[in-house]
Length: 238
Ligand SMILES: Cc1ncc(COP(=O)(O)O)c(C=O)c1O
Image 1 (tube, rainbow, N blue to C red):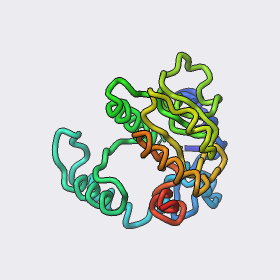
Image 2: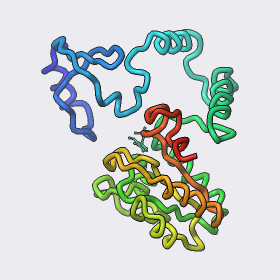
Image 3: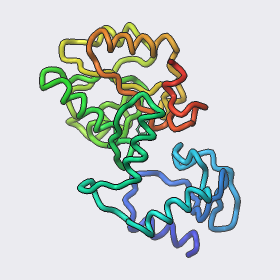
């Protein structure tokens, strides 16, 4: 299909939640992608910061091909060996004991929000979030996102979120009330403009959470999985 035809069909049939760059990409390898005209590009976007292993690494391709040839999808109603192996590996290489598997970053953050509310037992539900953050596009996660442009047009937003300046320990402390159950942040804000949390700030937030029985939610959707040189970004602060 010619590029112009792809764009025309997109215009007619795809809901435009994203403004597109006028490129029709057809293949990728490692750090490179190619458009429909055969032009090569160095891919600095990396699938919006998630293709940590590049495009089409042969071992990744082989693993995906083998799995879909064996069993496509069986829901969470059944046990499967690869899932428990991955959960075990994650427990061994992170601070966490157990994993919740889901399909997107927004879902992961949404789950953390729900988990916090369960922890608060209906008495504490407020989550302190940061200016400049990004946590996703579901109703709760865009409410937690400290950037007005993502929330515009979706009122009434979900209750129970307080936004404070990033990297300011005093402001986070002041925002804690008898309703607060968690603090949520990215150790390096991605969409907010690559803002790196100071060492003493993140350690201070950890202490604040311990002192006030608050959960600390670290959103590593963008800064995790090896992208900062360690597997998880929080490891830089240990
Ligand atoms: C820090 C952060 N949290 C959450 C999300 C949402 O992830 P997803 O687009 O997979 O829902 C993103 C996406 O860019 C992100 O950067």
